[in-house]
Length: 374
Image 1 (cartoon, rainbow, N blue to C red):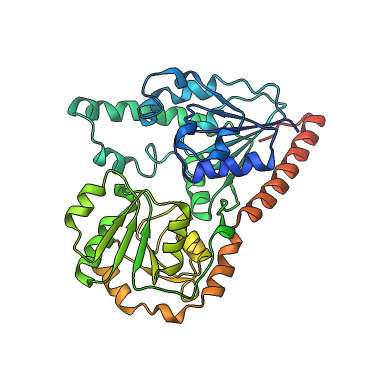
Image 2: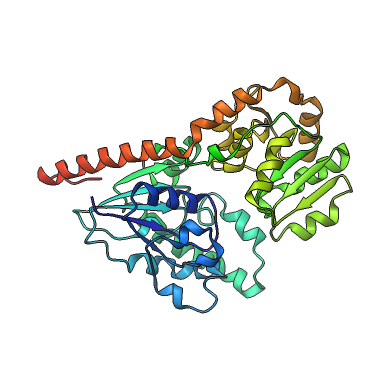
């Protein structure tokens, strides 16, 4: 098979980018298509990839402000020509699924989520937008046009694979498509448990509104228990301003330093509604239990009483009540880690290879028999 991989943009490291890297390891000869590429902002393995960019690459500020390019993203992905490829795999959470392929090319979409700012989180994004008055007034009309394009683009893949059952239900709602669940790759082999547990709780992630770190800060202000927050983002100043002395903010840490904090915490706290949630799995791979909000993909990765516990409302008081009842000594680090291995990179690669091979053979047989593949 001659394979191409399509990624939304390569300007920072996130879950979708990790998927693309894992896919490139399955298919090392694959050409990577993306709208914008900034190798300086990515780990070394990305610099070795064979990357082809769109016209957006040459627009000033695009590398630093790829969010401003959203109105042009559909044109960027439709401009790519995949007529020479047998299989194209799009790693999608926005516009990558909108590529155009010919009948002979199998298009598999690995979907992280239907486009959040158009569908499930539209009102939240609109409320939190920091644009000026005139831009904010123009957003609904522009979003409506993008939503129409997105719905048409959703019919272009021949097959959907997605990151969780939670996202499969969202794909069914917005795109009317069935999706096979293959959980995304987590580097579980990098993380290891330790016997040297210290007296602090831990949060790791980008400090942005939908991560709901403010809930944790307010809860621990009242609990007066040690809390470490690893990450940076636009919410950083606001959170530091309201945090009391028992809360410590850390950023610009090496992977080894983050690994060390994971393994020694009393518990990892995940207050957000995640599509899947990589950081909680990293914590579990380190043998540590997770205190998670009881919605979204975390319900598929955290097992009540075995690898962690849940709180049911995104409020400081609900989290306070849960932490007070939480007993970290009741959890077995070995059993927690064993569960986390279900989400390993090797498991992802094995399942994806099998799925792509099976889908390709089915596609080839359909072409021979003159059937439409969809």
